[in-house]
Image (cartoon, rainbow, N blue to C red):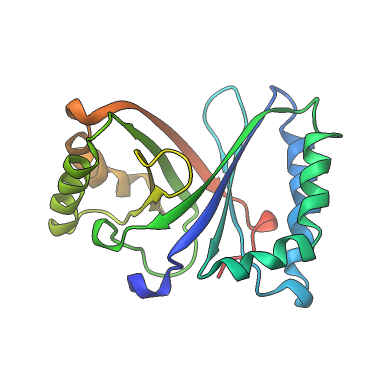
Length: 208
């Protein structure tokens, strides 16, 4: 599957559950995304991952889209109502949430073949002011080397100095190549970086 098979934009939504409340969050997300599997909303897509390391449960929902009109299916599917449920009835369970509008950077990405991988390393790089060019230059060097599969996005709403990298993998041995190159994206350009390991949740997903 080439880069042209991937939507150029996406909405990334992260939900953080309070300790011991992961099942409640998952139930609310199931209500929110379950309708998307029906034929009526089959053209609205979402891919959800759940972290499996650390004391706090994270749910990463990614909604790919080719044009903003594609997002009209979200309120039509009751997305706004489910968001309210997460904020209200789920208030005791939700530790926090954040979202970002992202655009894919094809020249920095090495897309995987096939559908969603069973696991992913999700990284958020927050850069120092003015460091975007240096960061992207390092990313292009890694891409030219033909390293492990990765999808690289940058935010286009809010701060412009945040990059989101998804490294999908099928088995842990796949991460050896990524680990050897990961340091090339660090150095003096970073304010901080967040890393999480997550597993694909088919029941909360409707992939492209």
